Length: 341
Image 1: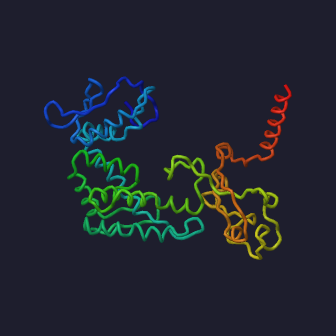
Image 2: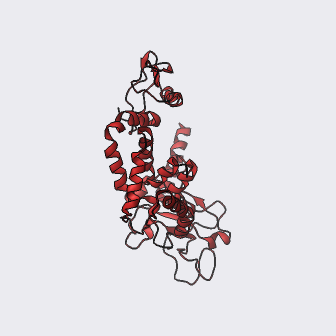
Image 3: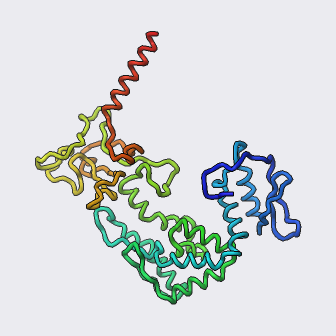
C-alpha cells in the first residue's frame, strides 16, 4: 500500500469505523466494520485520529495520500524499530546542509531584505542550538554547506538515539519536509511551536512572494491550494491604450508614469521583473515574475494580476492576445448562426 502517491487503491469496502482496546489490553486498534487493523496504536487519541482518516474516505476509492497519520504510525511502529540506525545515519548526513545554517550571500535586487530577515528569525535558533548542545553552529553562504564541529554532530546524534520510535519517525518526517533537522529538534525540545517552525521553513519563499507575487506552476508549497497569479501590467476598462510589450523608448524618462528618472529595475512599461530570469545567463528561464513599479502606481497607474499559463511556462512563448480576440469573435459569430437557425 502506497501512502505517498495520489493514486486510488480500491473502493471503500466498509461502512463503519470504530476504535477499541487491544485484545491484550496494551494499546488501541481501529475497526473497519468487523475487521481489525493490524497496527496497534499507543494512545486512544491517535487511534481516533486515524479512525477519522478512514472514515473520511469516499465510496469510490481509498486514497492513502489523505491519511498522513496512518502513514506515520505504520512507519513508527513497524519500520523504525528495524531501521533506527539507518534513519539516524540519514538524518546526520543531511545535518551539515541544514536550512538554518545557510545564509544568502548579501542583498541584491533579487534577495533584498532576505539576509536581514534571516538574522532576525534564525539567529535565536542558532543561539538555542549553542546553549542546548554546547557548540556554536557554523553558518555558510554556499549551497553545498559547511562541516559542523564534531562535538555538535555527536551531541545531536546522541539526542536522536535517545528518542523512542514514534519521536524518531516524527522528526524524520519533519526533517524531510523542512530541509532541516534543527527545526524538528526545536519542536521536539519545546523551543519552537508549529506556527513558528512553518514561518522559519517558508522564510525566503514568503519574502519572494511578498515582493513578486505567487507564480503559476510554482512547485513549492504555497499559502493556499490554488496558485495566485503573478502581477503583470494589463489594461483596465477606461484606462489609456494597452501598454506595449516592446522595449522602452530611448527617450529620457518613463513613458508610463512621466517621471524624468525611471525607477530602478523598471522596464519603462510600469513593471519590474524579478526571480531567476533576471540572473545573468538565465534569461531563458520560462517562469517570469513581475511586480508593479512603485513609480507607476504612485502616478495613478492600475494593475490587474494574472499568472503565466502552463503553455507559456512550457514553451517560453508570450500570451497571444490577438488569437484570443479572434477566437472570441469566431465564437460570437457561431452563436449568431445558432440564433438564426
